[in-house]
Image (cartoon, rainbow, N blue to C red; front, side, top):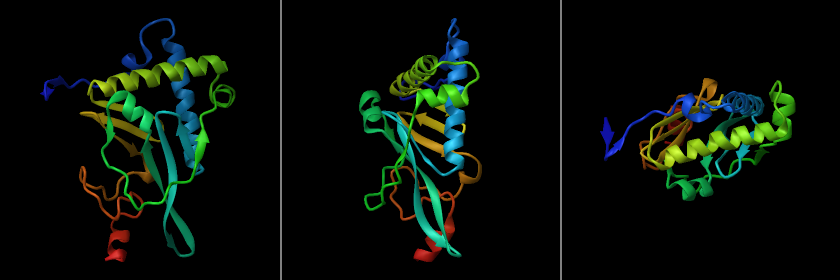
Length: 195
């Protein structure tokens, strides 16, 4: 199959981790990154992977006295420039900025989220895997990369993040369409209230 002359190839774990002597360390480093992200996300803390993406939380409404928050995926400007990609859903011009996130800390990744990796091992492993993702995105390859809290999807140089679990689903905008509600947690409730 081809799309606009670019063969559709799905990036596999072998592509990400390689088949060399360091592939086991790359896999362990990736597992540690996913564990760190899941830990932060479950506590509704923001996540910042410098020059890749930021996941923050926005307050989108109130329900019986509590604030309703939703995760927001923001692709890094640097990642877009370096790899010639763009987000599927452009940011809404009037949307408030999400809360700041925790910056990736390789020491914490090694100590708290891996069994045997050093800080340097984690750095090299995550750097190598993220570089593979960027290179594949730049070629227009179809990507579905599991980050533990959801899947980074890139197709035809358009990037999105599909959250998993309780944060998945809901109402989504069509490509390029601006709307008042693109909230996977509120879905149609917010649209009906605003109407």
